Length: 455
Ligand code: UD1
Ligand code: CA
Image (cartoon, rainbow, N blue to C red; front, side, top):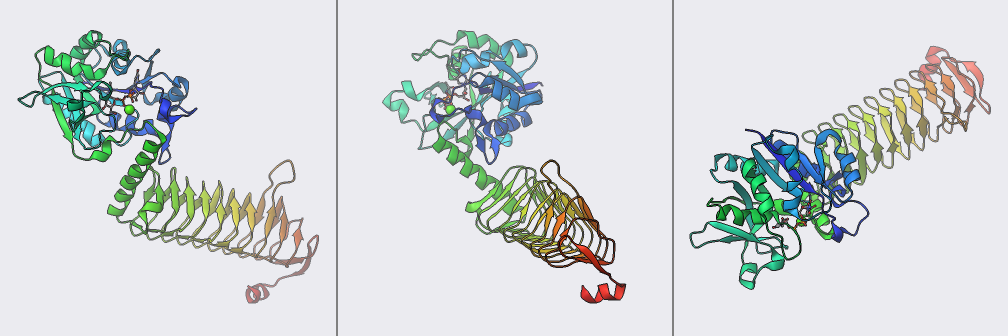
């Protein structure tokens, strides 16, 4: 059976008071439409159709190949919105799953069950309802004396008795497609001049069908976003959901309320996350790490048994047993090999620090390749930018860079070489050589035992 999702995203979202289309406002780092789209996609068999209107170009651009877009212009209500998908879908699908793009917390499993219920249903509609004392402007579900659904009334036009009804329309429906296309043009215009999708329910009843429903247990799934207050509620609920999944998978969050993990992040077992930590984008963290407090990691890969304290990482790769911080910054292209120690106030960009490198204090390493077990003294700087281009620095294994060394790139320091404190290195340093001064000159050749004894 072919099942296609129609996701409504054309509304203006006036109450957001924003230049950004409502459905592109992020929740835990992802535009809210992404959640709705993914859930709809998982519950259906065909490419989803998204109805766009306000901010159409921005939404279309975000969706790319992930959906087929149809434009609703002007926006004459939710039934009119669904009607825009008919030319594309008539004859091309058996069931239509309609959801709203401003409900990011609806789970894929819920939509799957909704579709499954409609598959078994002989009538043309299954809809999702929820019981709640806080109606939040939702439509109310009307039932007859036998308890059968007879209609949905929108809050704006409901009578006082209807307003007291606690069963609410969530805003997710699965329709039999042929009936839907036939019903949409028959929907009457509302007093507000809109065509309400919710009126399909009364039409089905008038056609002699019964309307099926599925009750949602978890109220949180129905949080819809109309204002920025709702946006913050949705953010908090999504954050809790993500954090709970990690905790159930064996990750310790010292304080989940101040731990901000985006949906794509992967974290290994027995890793401990301290408060006020942000794990963002395509980040992967291994097992047995200690991360935070006060740390932000974006699009980075961290190995096992690492310690990262009060630091900022972006686009970095960190291998096993590395400790970082406090107050370290890794930028794009930073690669710290196994066992690296990077202490306070260091910055690394587009550079590889070989296994066992020690960089304890106040250093900037950019566009550099640093060999194994190199010691980088306090205050070392790679002067990688000459005003026009970025130049490369290379340091061989077991070299010792004295405190406050300036490495004026492009430059190479050979294996086991040493630089004296305050050296300004403007020329390549051969292996096993000590250089000192400004500009740095060779002082003497280091014999291997000498190199041993001083390291
Ligand atoms: C709608 C339901 C209501 C339900 C509530 C749950 C209708 C008539 N009412 O009300 O019963 O309880 O959702 O959240 O459906 N949209 C378009 N084109 C339009 C109008 C709306 O694409 O012409 C889109 C909006 O972008 C939004 C969705 O449809 O994503 C819902 O519209 P909205 O105006 O937010 O409906 P509600 O008043 O919340
Ligand atoms: Ca809404």
